[in-house]
Amino acid sequence: MSDLNAALGAVLEGVTRDGAPRVPGVVAMVTDRDGTVFEGAAGVRSLAGDQPMTADTVFAIFSTTKAITGTTVLQCAEEGLLDLDAPAREYVPALGDIQVIDGFDGQGAPVLRAPKRDITTRMLLLHTAGFGYEFFDEVYNRLGVEHGQPSVITGAKASLTTPLLFDPGEKWQYGSNIDWAGQVVEAVRGKRLGAVMAERVFEPLGMRDTSFALTGSMASRRAAIHQREADGSLTPLDLVLPQDPEVHMGGHGLYSTVGDYLKFLRMWLNDGDAPGGRVLRADTAAAAARSGLDGQEVTMLPGVIPTLSNDAEFFPGQRKSWAYTFMVNEEDASTGRPAGSLGWAGLANSYYWIDRRTGVAGYWATQILPFADPTSFGGYLDFETAVYRHAAVGARV
Image 1 (cartoon, helix red, strand yellow):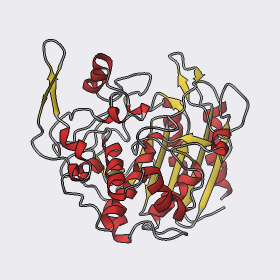
Image 2: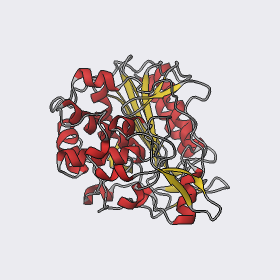
Image 3: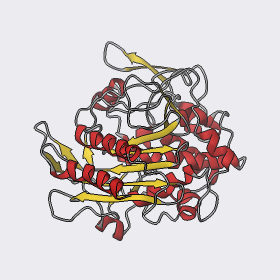
Image 4: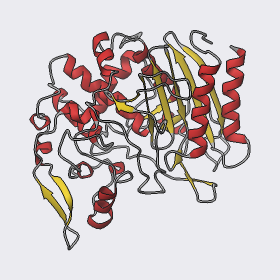
């Protein structure tokens, strides 16, 4: 156990103190099925001050929100409240008004047409409905720059009413699908998504520091998001996600601590079970952890807006697919993560993995833009590699 702590601690110290570029601060933890096996923090919450990073630091977790939203969708399906293969417009009528964009005409106006088939909630969970993100897609970026399409970061309902990039079901493309899935949950439950999460996920898991709105305590522990400049330096940003958004964005809107998120990961290691009660049935958890893509694959995410994202891909050259709602690595990864494991990331360089075969999961949190920051992402991969190299599984602090 001392070897594990030393190895993982060295990774955290290395990215925050050694050489340049570095990260301002990082919190990272590892769990097995029974409890935490490593908890570490290094650096500071903001380069504008001297508050140290601590285990209870609060982060904007961006797209690691998605798996939690996906869990609330699966709960609705378990209870017979939602048919994943029914037209999603039956629950959210606005989805029936979404058209497909076939490019732009000579005057730069979008060329739109009706989709060939309905969007289903299953497509939303799998990112096959046709929605994208402006920072990963040139068409969406053009809609924002030339036509004033609001960014999803605004939390505005208008930010979701983007056209589809292709007919529903035809391919995988990462985008605002899970934001729409959250709207399906709200329609089915008759409550805002945050209230559903609090009641059906956070309470049974004991997640006290996870919310769309920062409490006073959470705000006092929040880490600042930093911008990586061209010369590798870091600039603290005054960037806080909307605290009373028009839409609880199920794709990216939560704040949380690494310790809280570890409880969520542990639930997946335990087939949906949790200390405060079962969150998902075991058969649901097992089915949700398998790829739902039929012959399609997860592709590289191109960094269309350089201030927000670099080109990003996990394990280049290896096959990746998508589950409900995680990436699945279909081959053994270089870090030691076995084939069939789950994982994903958040825009400000947070990363997690869930290895249900071995029984280990971990979360790495920094607050840096653009996504796929080489120092933070590289540190995360070193962290995961060290976990497998030092056989952390089964040894708890």
